[in-house]
Length: 325
Ligand code: ATP
Ligand code: LTN
Image (cartoon, rainbow, N blue to C red; front, side, top):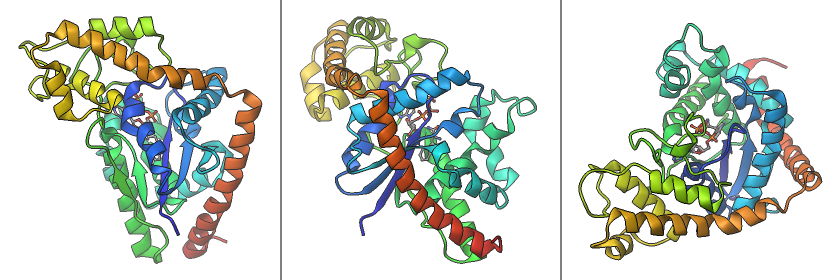
């Protein structure tokens, strides 16, 4: 039996090139060798306030993005989290074995809760438990994500191991799959921060649906470091980040990139980077327009049916082992 992959993204805001290079790109590549489940995690989205009509639209739009990126519904299961009630059910059981202390250590809660636990939503606090539930329901082997999710994945592993120890072997213990390059694309405006959908300043992110003009402007205005030379150099994080983006969108090796820009100035580099990003996104942006809502709904309904059949098997086992049902 082929090994399983599970991953998901939230239908909040617009996907950026960091989401693509850190996660989606690998989702597509892994389809050849694995049985994949790709989820639109709308229950995670409401851990921060969302406008209902916007969330609904963003959910279908995200399915369009998965497909345009190359997730193939004939090979992979694409579905909406809330269409599979077992996610919320298993999350409850896992919340009863998770510890306050381990959740308090999650850095994303501290960031997204703005350090004010008193006022943060409880869902934002328990969010990693729902993520563990997503993953464990499918007996997942591998979870392709960006670097920012590594800590959440550790928690998923800990919960799986704890449950297995207390109730007997039930869950596969998942491994993270974090790419060597692109796992943490930084903001174009602040190379210390990751590129983020929730950044208030859109100038920091290249969104997958940005037009050529917008992309070019954002890259021209991107911060650079003092010093000269276009090189991979972590002590010059802004140029380093831009060069990583260049490498990944052109599929060149690191050596080829360095040789290509030897002796060139930042200005020339930025012009070429902008062209490369625009070219890279063009076919993707064409494909996004191809999927109408009816086709999407059909794909998602089929995906949900397949996901429910897998998820219900695991949940049944969990309930029977815990003495529920
Ligand atoms: P954001 O922080 O951008 O608002 P998120 O991480 O909450 O987004 P998702 O859409 O759920 O949002 O993330 C989808 C995937 O993209 C995850 O696997 C995440 O690790 C990855 N990812 C997010 N930001 C980056 C980044 N800057 N570089 C690389 N990967 C990223
Ligand atoms: N927490 C992730 C989104 C997410 C996820 C998952 C990723 C929810 N459930 C399961 C991988 C596997 C995020 O915020 N990027």
